[in-house]
Length: 279
Image (cartoon, rainbow, N blue to C red; front, side, top):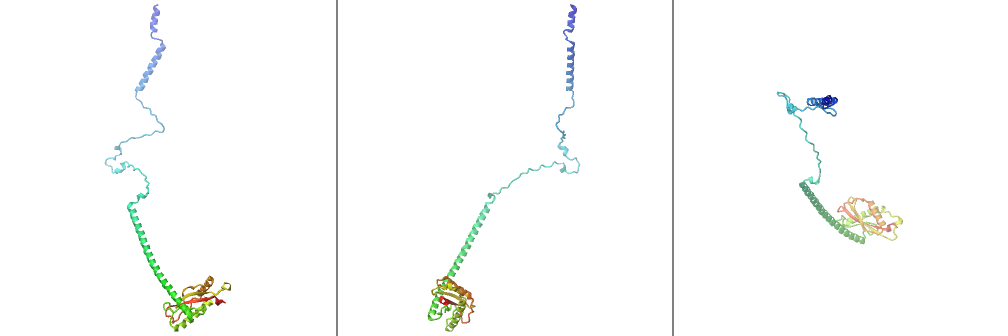
């Protein structure tokens, strides 16, 4: 009885010896872990990829040493470059100054006015020239009518009545002499002129008109014998007949020079062409 109680008090309260062993090991582990944690050591660094080392220095390191002869520009950091801004120039009509536009407009108006004034002056001058020419033409037309009347009177009196023989007008203005002594000279010269023209006058028999027709061509011969003027005084109505006569006169020019019996520098003739000359 007594021995059982003693044995139970010695081992029953303290537990199994295995439990005590594990408890002791656990306590030792906890103590070792606490010591390891509290003791300072090298910190672990986690690196990814290649390691880089950066040294941080202050501005005083960049200062040159005292007493150094090196320029300060070497130790100064480079100035940052200014930002580059690209600008595109837009040309527009509004960029042109308004004053220049006004000046150019005034110059244009002045040029237009000047050109118009020049045109007006030129047109006025041309009108005056045309008026003078009309006056000269009217005088010439009047003189032609007078000469035609004189030639008709001469033809009635017998001078130039022969078909094809030219007759001259007796007018000092147109250059023919009016004296009777020179009349024979004019008649002789006119016959020579007609002989040359008739030699150059050709008309095919097939184009010969059936009826008798007549055309008169008025000419002005200068003192040198050159043909100064030629035109129809009377047309026959047959265009081919008239053109053949005109070609004959032009082909015969120039004529012999005029002698001293002509007071002026030219003489007028009316050359009559008859269709009977070819029959």
